[in-house]
Length: 116
Image: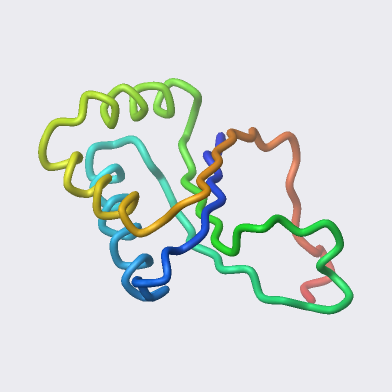
């Protein structure tokens, strides 16, 4: 699995719910096209002990792809900027600033085998 991550700051005139709905609509459309297999929207929760060197941005999104092939094809699909993806993408991007992206690939993951 390969994941695209994005950090962002939500513009003051928008709510978390408005952004989350726009992001969900965008990601669902990409999923319907066969690119994205899962997505998550996070908002950083301040914590006195865990916020060492935390980023300035408070929002984080992730979209999972089965392989680099689908990620690259998705990029081309979005960059083509045709409808309806143009409107979905604009619906997300107009609500945020200070955007940064990166891609990660799972090397190994696991679960607690004790069932906790």
